[in-house]
Amino acid sequence: MGEKQSGSLLRRLVCILALLGIAAALYHLIPDWMSHWKAAEAYRQLAGDMVTVDGDTKEKDWWSKAVHIAFEDLKQKNPDVIAWIRFDDLEAVNINYPVLYAEDNFYYLKKDLNREYSEAGCIFLEELNKPDFSDYYAILYGHNMRDGTMFGDLKKYREDGFYDANQYFTLYTEDAVYRYQIFSFEDAVNGGPVYQIGFQPGGEYQKFLSELLAASIVDTNVKLNQKDHVLTLSTCNGTGNRERFAVHAVCIDERKIAEDR
Image (cartoon, rainbow, N blue to C red; front, side, top):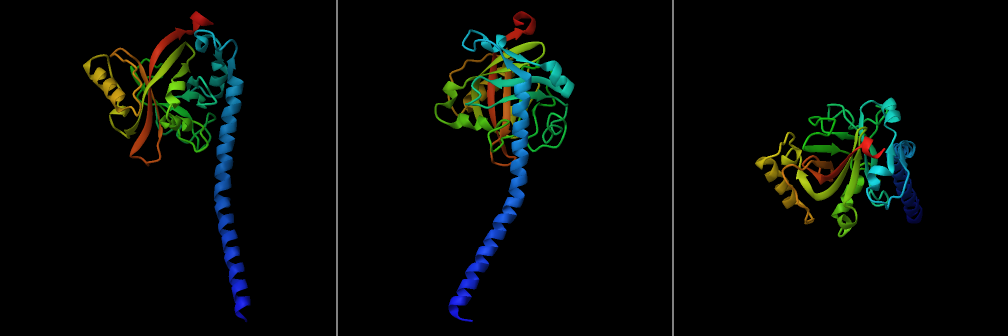
């Protein structure tokens, strides 16, 4: 066999091996991609069915008057639903999901609303928190999905100027509507002070709030006091289990459902 034929066979072999490698990679990647796409599509459809925006979103207090959540239908699907979280500009921050509570931080980590396996999981409340959101400090967890779903869009707060245009979100429950303003975001040590529960008004809580403000990647100039209710949104930041990306928000308004509906 001549050198040209040997070289040609070698190139063909290399091409075949490369194609086999690509095929093997696709064999593993396509099911994951399809799973993530199906989860995103299911949540998009759920939001379309369960959330109605009826009114002028430029009107004062629109967040408590114009947005309606079909909690009765949601609880028929899963009685563990305790709230719905919705950011103002969904094109900028695509967070528009039900919030679940199971008294177990692992239960909804890889389960969807139907309690079936899902890499995306659910947005869920810290197991040590009260499901009526009466705690002064509470934590919501969600995955940092590559496609930006779940809490994946939170990483945008690292971008210059993004915070200024996206400071607010709303938490809806059956009984009340809570308006939040983000005041800090940081890479927090997993299991560190950010993940402690049980604060009460007083010097210790005030010190904790001051530490959250001081740790922020951006100085937001938001003022806090020891009677404020704070909600932290926590997700992975790509460093394994060592740290989490935590976005802290203070409740700036509360409306009972009966007052507005």
